[in-house]
Amino acid sequence: MQSATQRILAGKHLWSAMIILAAFLATRGAAQVPPEDRPECPEPTRTAVVERADRFLRGVAAVWAAIRVSPPAAATSECISVRVAPTNDDPRWGPVWEADYGPASVTVRVGSGTQTVVAYLDTRVLDFLGRLRAPEPPEQISPDTAIGRAVRYLHLAGVALDDLVPWYVAVSDTTDRADGTSRQYTVIFKRVWSGVPFRYEDQRVTVLMDARHGLLIGFGAVLAAVTPAQTGLSVSPETAVSIARDMLSSLESVMQPAGPSNVQLQVVLPNGIWPDWKSPRSRSEMPTTLQARLAWVVETPTRNPGARVEVWVDTVDGSILGGAIKVSMGRAEPPAEFAALKAAFASCRRLTLASVGSSKGSSGAVTATRSLSPEKCPLPFYGALADLTPWPPGRPAPPLRATHRLGITLKDGRTDLWDYDARNGTIGRSKKVIARAGVSLRQWVSPVRWSPAGTGAQAAPAP
Image 1 (tube, one colour):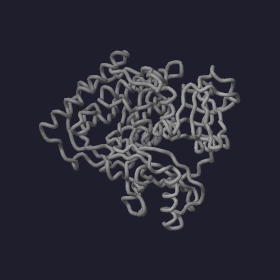
Image 2: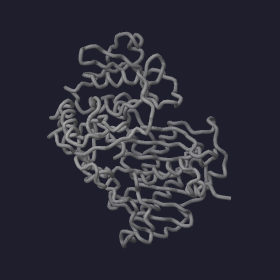
Image 3: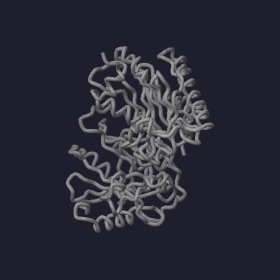
Image 4: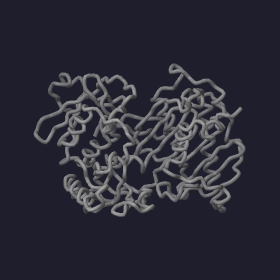
């Protein structure tokens, strides 16, 4: 009989394998280079890496002891090798050493020179959990507990928490055979700088835990980017759209614009994909530097059916920093309600926020308690408008219980009112969830700061 780990990693349960590898590798296309083909870590660096990995494993074991669960202890295993990690030359990782522990099948990755644990995978916990039945909802830890436990593990790893914001937390079955292995919590944190989100693929942390206890299965932290040196918005979003569309119009017909563009402010890692988008280097969309830049991300539909492209325009000098090619893969179009919300965000000139008790229903006037405008707070304002996504079609939405009224003042002076649920970052009307707010808007509505010990979140004063 195959173990839980063998069932997953043998490829019989592809979705679970994808989830685990995404958390562990945290980068697209990372190659599994055989250990013997990767350089060994020299002394005294090897000793420092092993000491850091051991300290992390002891901390994880202490968390498990505190919640009174005792899977096999990695802390009692011996590190058998320390080699260069197979990151496929992706600079988003930074230099990484990989420590393997046997026979426990535990791998710990430590950033070179940072003493930060950046990734971890524990297959013996998967085997332990595979002998247990899948926990039903009353037996599962709460989302808040899952976030707190994930933060605790990241604190033990030495991951900087100050600019991380929870983006996604949910329980899901990762195989068609539900057991203690497959029913997992996935917690994703996104990185935010000065109120502006990093582009999702570039800087984030993914943590996997079992749903019953919050035992750590694995995590991956891609956070090596250097924050932008420039903060100016000398180039307007309208100008950025013109620059992007002019560039696309100069390319082959398949890349030329075929509809209106939308634009949002994000922090990106330049990748030099344009104009030579056909080269293997460009098509990998691999960053060319770890120096992040503030950019207008202009997304445009092209003449290639189903394809949209991103052009990243520098907010200071208007230079093109890179971009991405996105294919829809036949996904359903978002509902009309989302199109209306997206149009309101695109036309927004001021954001206001009021608690439910200070307004007279979703159609009444809002007495603003807080506001954002491009004149007073340009980076937080444009950051709050970024990353709006429709609620996934076909996925059951949670009930919308409005905690706030979000007022969007449009170009023509009218104010469009929407309900906002701070508990899960959803936006909608008439108790219907329509969209998920971006991470910067969530942080503006409900700001938090992490406790020094990494034990959870504390309320932070509103800006």
